[in-house]
Amino acid sequence: MQLEATNRTPAVSISATGIEMKGECYPEDITAFAEPVMEALRQQLESAESFHARIELYYFNSSSAKFLFDFFEELEEAAEEGKQIQIDWCYRADDSSMQEAGEDFEEDFEHAQYQIVEI
Amino acid sequence: MQSQDFHKLLEQRRTFFCYSGLLSEDVLSTFSGIVREQMSEMEDDAEITKRVFGIFVEQAQNVIRYSKDRIAEGGTGTVAISRAEDGFLIEAINPMDHENAEGLQKNLDELKAMDNKELRKAYKQRLREGPPEGSKGAGLGFIEMARKADHFEFDFVGSTELLFVFKVWIKETSS
Image (cartoon, rainbow over all chains, first blue to last red):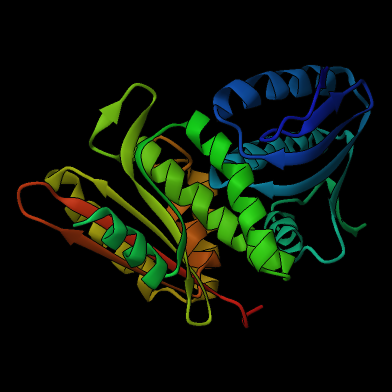
């Protein structure tokens, strides 16, 4: 699955081995954006042994925070089932809001490997 | 009020962005670029620009989703951004139902009494539990604004037509 970035949605690329999400995230219609991404993620996770998520966002709104939470929950559940899950939350060096956002999600992971990465 | 007085009023209150009327997601898309451009021209600290923009989006989406006056894909209201003494003021005003006011007031009073740690906890709890009944989003907007704000105030004004006013200040000196 490949989604081009728009002004309000990130570029998304999902393959058998991982997902990359990069850009802005405050979609006009969060459901219309989130549902296909979650569906593609679930499909890939079913057959994957290991999966790598790289998230590089510059801004997301509160509706998207819920999407990200659900997205990470899916990955954490896969890790709990024994899959190798690696998540990199990437933020630009001077971007303290995205660094803090990354820290907000950190405590939800027990089984998945979650790293906050300065870029 | 004379047209020139309206112009002067905006100047006096140092309001550099003001929109009143139908707000929809399409309208918000159009404004996003403008607000970001205005902010980055005025403010060197990208983090402040980002916080002001984030508050603006949440404010606009509240009007879009919860204004009592509905048109097509949105609601009517006013959103404005002004220079404040030591930062920026982001305001939203929209008509609302009397019956929803009490619940909202209680919710906002609770948020106002919370410190940063408690707000973070409330935010995480809301994420886990999902949106409350009647929410058209994640139910996180006000918590998110309370976390980002240096200060916020709200008011319910008018008896026949009730207006909800929400004001958020972002200071330039804060981290």
